[in-house]
Length: 261
Image 1 (cartoon, helix red, strand yellow):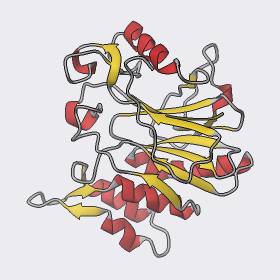
Image 2: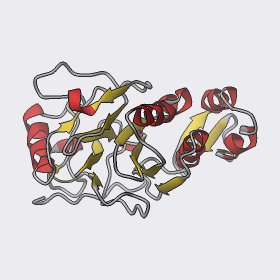
Image 3: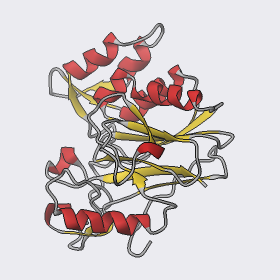
């Protein structure tokens, strides 16, 4: 990809017949708050962020050069709906969903983020793949479980996952409402593990630092997805690589994508 510097997942359990990557803010043509943070063009992929639409389309075309097809861009609303990526096309209505799955080669699942947790999934036999956008609301509501169930309905067996770039545990400040939402949905035996993912913020009563990666692992484990890689980035603290809504408010979006070869 000319000028594009994607992250290739370090994902030992991924089957050999999948492709996967996560974009960064580098290598595009967007300017202003959507640039690469270094004075050059940024690879903003979000049409809903206030960026010039023509620049976003050029960025998407640049990303697509080394993909097997057009990414299945969905309209994300922090919900739990799962789309069939094969049904998402340039001439079809925009699908409102926060995850998609694919069971045919060349169909590219994609989710956009700028602090929320992107999770790529594949069954270990390489029959079905999926991508989920897990902000805290969608995560608490069960978007990962819905994605896993949709994959299994499409023929997936054992599933492995990779957690892409999201806001790290030293940066994700949340209030008691977020803590309470997760605790209210705790299943038997989960309370202590959920509580451990929220560290009281020193000097800020009622505030916590939340570990969205730990919460992602816990929710994946609910559906026996135990082979989980990734979770090593922090979008909010790494301005050289990532867009971050929490850090900048007006900003672009990066994407995490997966497909069957």
